[in-house]
Length: 254
Ligand code: PEP
Image (cartoon, rainbow, N blue to C red; front, side):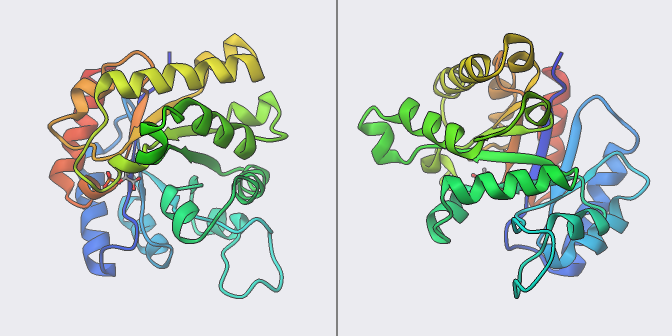
């Protein structure tokens, strides 16, 4: 039984005050509940403040990125052990904005993933096709290539710690959400790939989140699909009410 996992990716949004208030409102409602796994991923600069705001609740703290080395002369970078030190449990790697804007390759994502796992962070690995790739009928090939490249060298034991987020690029921040059928088709294929790479038992235990314009209105139908185990939420995670409605939908779909 895979526990639904709802994570909010705040991206480069909120102020310190707004972020801590948002986190406190989410933590107040989630409280000690463990029905759904919930995490917030604020900007790195606010991790410590947000960590304080959610302390005492079951809401977990996640970072949006990390570097692939533990320490050293890497000006401006933040290492996985530093994220653990500040209270992080999760880290997002391979978000499409980082792949597209910062030119992160599957190899970069793989190095970050391995470094995160070494520090005992739980990584959320993002994959997803562009609109052109979907129109060209290349969705399966693209996400499979991203999976193979990003997960290179991971043992089954390591894979058991990883969450996958399927985020079609054309659905991110656009208001155009994938249909439940479109999302389910890719999720089922990703699980099949995990079965081939590892084994059926592991494949059936790995959580695969959907991300891309998830909101309070469309969450229930998406989260009721058999292979959709949660959501990585961008825009709708910036308001407590909307985010908590998605958490409630996940609970109802569990
Ligand atoms: C995201 O950036 O991970 C995301 C899914 O954004 P949005 O929900 O705003 O589409």
